[in-house]
Length: 232
Image (tube, rainbow, N blue to C red; front, side, top):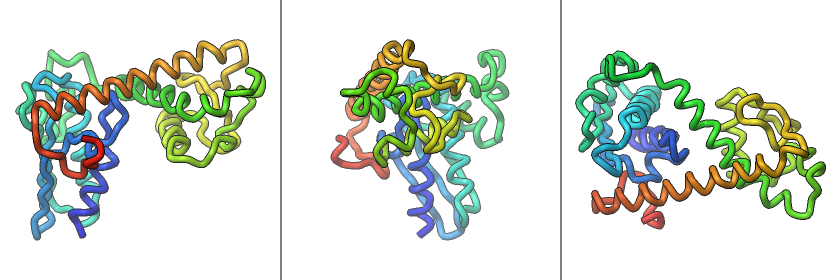
């Protein structure tokens, strides 16, 4: 069904800061598909004052994801209950960028911001995948590990995908530990601070995700479209 395909597309759209799907976060409040292939999606966020640049990225990404679904003839993505909702909704509908939407208030487009969030996602994923493998190994053994040496888990594939999005080495034979900016292999002397930074980044993302879920539950009592009930 087209509805299921649209929902699957929305599940690929992530909160750029938290690196979690909008559906799992409960940010999709409604999704309607009509017989003519028209789709209307409504998004909500934990607070009225969530950063406009983050909100713009999510609305624009949701619009692009839904529009790309075969069979969709018209796409409308609307952000509700947000201080910049009118501007964001109008800008995305007009296929305008962030700078054209917000004019002098925008420092520029959001490509650099997106890249920075992806680098944080790579660090967080590195901690999830590498920390269990580092136990009992010397620093030299850890930095010699390849991505394919990690167990075949969703965490490994998520890390691979984020690295690929950044243009970093992402093959099985590529190093498990790479600098998230340059893609260079991390050497043994830099291993401890690299893993420490990765752990702090993962904890920060997970704590922020929990806070956002809690705030959303306080603001809205309804379960989001596609949200898993065990995440309540």
